[in-house]
Length: 167
Image (cartoon, rainbow, N blue to C red; front, side, top):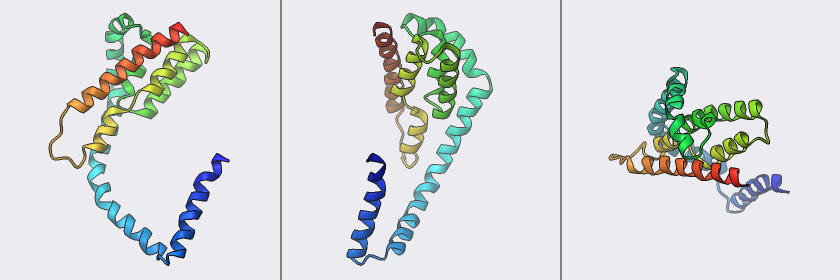
């Protein structure tokens, strides 16, 4: 039933537009034309974030930071095996999905590490990617929202690992 919601919604809007005698193709083309300036302003920020996240992973910097931060993460109850996932997730959703996949394959889907990794993945966000989207057109950008999002990601990881240990 849920698979039919979007097609039915689309058909309903289409039928309503026909009833109101709206020229559908012209309205659609006008919407696309209005979105092009937005796309032009977003593209440089998105390209920079995607390139930097790939450089972060490929350069080995993420692995080095993971090794350096492992003792501190362990202090907060986050297993050291999750450090790469925690470091990559704010930059790249697909990159962190690869780390999640590796953890599940290596330790098993029902293991404590896999459960923690799933909770960390699901409760965190790609902060820098979203910041690039939100602040692309802004004249003045404050680092406070990004810092708050990163702190939220970290707190979610700490609490998620704690709850996985308890349950």
